[in-house]
Length: 78
Image (cartoon, rainbow, N blue to C red; front, top):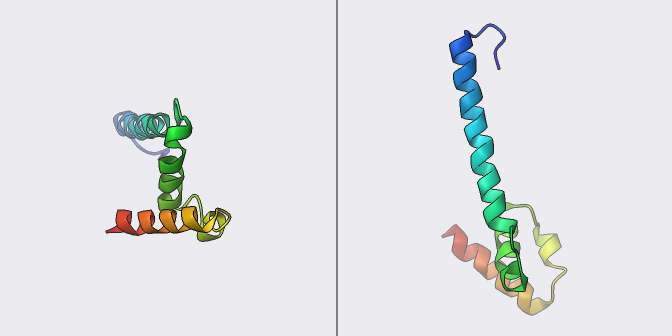
């Protein structure tokens, strides 16, 4: 935030920042709250697609799962 900004501008910047944090919090909650075995695969897919997991990380899985995840990532990119 700019120290020289008017109070109104600073408040507007605060509200925008608050909204971004709130929206990201909702994103995190949707992804991880109540995660069960049935959602592990799609969660790993999203983490891989988002770049939180690398090809090297995914390579740790067996060949079948590795291939499935790499194909899923390719289809998400299209």
